[in-house]
Image (cartoon, rainbow, N blue to C red; front, side, top):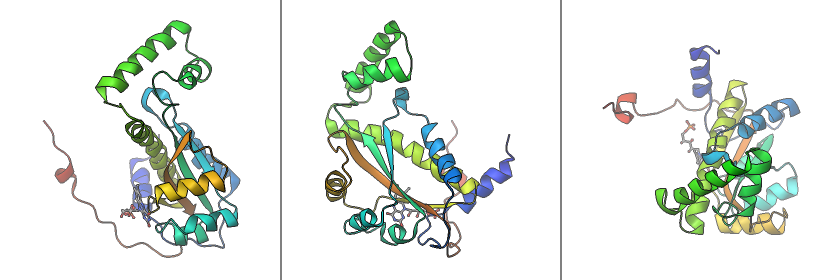
Length: 219
Ligand SMILES: Cc1cc2nc3c(=O)[nH]c(=O)nc-3n(C[C@H](O)[C@H](O)[C@H](O)COP(=O)(O)O)c2cc1C
């Protein structure tokens, strides 16, 4: 087990890093460690509705800049820049052959469990969570993708690597670039976030947060 203070130190060390040191690069080993924490992240029903694109090509990074106001300096300076994609409906819809195959091949569930879980998932989508249109399904699946984001950033901080999560982009225009220039099948994948990794140039301003008793209620 890791010392609690060490873990909190990492949470305090992590900040939304605005500018990275271009002379420092994350090692393959460390990048794989960060990506591994995404892979091991939990997701609703265990469906892992995510894909991560590591963008190291300079031209592709430049293409992203026009429609990503929140990412400009990070695209220029980050050691590694990752795009978080989320699987969309129809793949994430209860009746999709993709999910059936996923339960069989990835989750290695026996036939009767695949059937039962599929039926439960249908009820969950149709009534429990009201996931009744494509946008709702995407937003729900996207939430899972954000769990991986949080884990990647925390894991990075634990080994002294800085990060910045990014939603400062035009989703539609950037998805067009992802389709045309990155060759991503945007029928299958939607853009959830970007995240930059590297090493800080400047020290961040002191963290501001509300107090614990303002955000937690015990009943
Ligand atoms: C989902 C999400 C999207 C964000 N988008 C951007 C962004 O586009 N550009 C940016 O510089 N910071 C972005 N941030 C960083 C936040 O502004 C930052 O996390 C927040 O102000 C708290 O500061 P701290 O992370 O340094 O503690 C984003 C954070 C999150 C969680």
